[in-house]
Image (cartoon, rainbow, N blue to C red; front, top):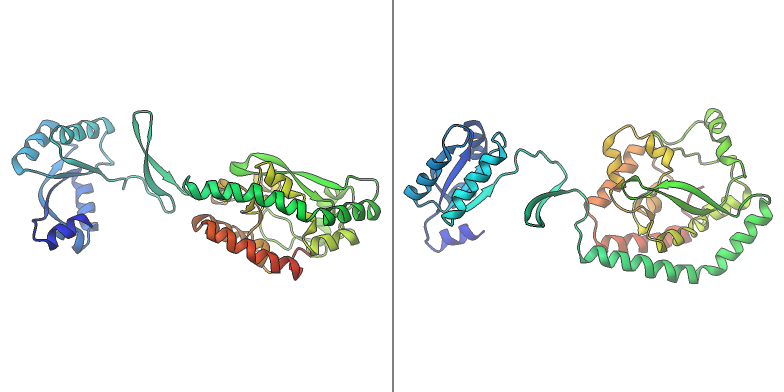
Length: 332
């Protein structure tokens, strides 16, 4: 970094004071590697919990300190704020460690709200031009795909009406959207009219091929013959392009689950898959739904997508969806 370049150019290491409780200072200094230590000249330590703030002012002045590093999770915020002011009036950099916030996934960034600086811990993709592009691709892509697939939509609608009369052609179900907000997700109906009423008895008679709160049965007796063809070719999912146009879904993202299945989540970590918009296709949809029978593994795939998200990843998944659909690797 900047300090390492200073060393290489012959400049002396920056004079630093570490402020915090004795235990926090010890833990912080032990965490530094050789490069970190070489970049700084530790000229003093300051016990924020015991010493008066005025003493910090004189320490900075006496040692000509260039930076104060605060490792002060055990100290009142108000006292830290006053110590930062002492640095500010002398033009000295104040670095505040966030070690007291233990995060495994979230990435720390800083932002402003009004005149208040905010430490932001975000475990979902940052708001950026890429997300704006994703939104544009969703809307334009959904409109184009709806236009191109209109003959298929017509054939599917007629087929469902003839194969299973007496019930709506489109099946609308409450699904969990971003942050769990429910929305009506649309599909071509592929099951008998009273399918949801039969769910409990089907589970009892046939069991569940998926562990966890999600129900999956390869040969579900509620699916009528034409419906199974629609499922195999993934044509039953096409009405969800309307959900994408309405902004409730994305072309790529974790598949939206029924609200009652989300409410049955056993682990709070599973809810992180709700931190982005649900999608029409995803890693599980194109490569996993016929071989994965563990909900835990399914969630891991979704979280891996969220943690590594990029426009390029979305485009890759969309391209991989095409052969998956053409080769009928859809739900059976």
